[in-house]
Image (spheres, rainbow, N blue to C red):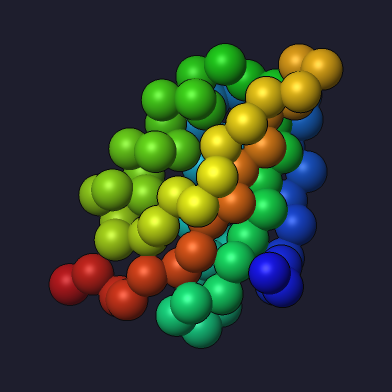
Length: 79
């Protein structure tokens, strides 16, 4: 799987990881995959919610050594 963009949001608190994810996804074509790394525990709830409400696909969510890693595929534009 090719990752189009990587976001290092470690150390940032809610809502900054999701806001950065939204900005990066908006600049990419449908189907592009973005990797987001965060340390804010609230992202465990925020990222899936953002994906569902924005029409994006959460491909993977995992935690290792205190870092939460998400792979998100950009969906179609939601009107």
